[in-house]
Image (spheres, each protein chain N blue to C red):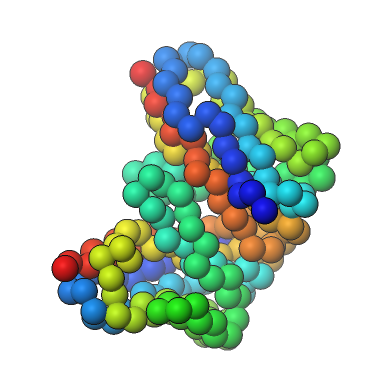
Length: 110
Length: 112
């Protein structure tokens, strides 16, 4: 099945800083999503982005499908951005469901 | 529209028991997927249902099973619980296969 790797595993930043989270995947994808997991465990959808670029407020994402990577940008970080960010991909017929990376644990300090 | 709902939110069971978890998808969504999240293994795919048929199943033992009803609601069952089954179980729904998946709040299962 597809492999999904995220980097960095941990990131500590000051409030107001910008950050870039990376997701590499090993095969072509039909679906690529970015999630933020809140402290209670719920996965919050950020982007559905199998290719191209999208923006939503301070967050934006870019997926370069031909080079098999996706980037999540967070600008002007706030403490509420803290948490774990997951990238997940689905390839081919989706036989393995969404395959998740191990996540990036982001801490924004005031 | 209401989001994906899961019941119960928390559950404590003992080894050897069985458990049934329920998931109600977003209205109109026909695909329901289940995932298990543990600190050691991360998020892993359990199975996917579409129009009452299991489309795919992850690498889990036969003790893990599920079903989907005609109204798209889904249940998953774990029999003969083991300590290692303690996890957060997440359900996701999507309009179609390979579409955006929306996750519920999860059921946190503790096996003693």
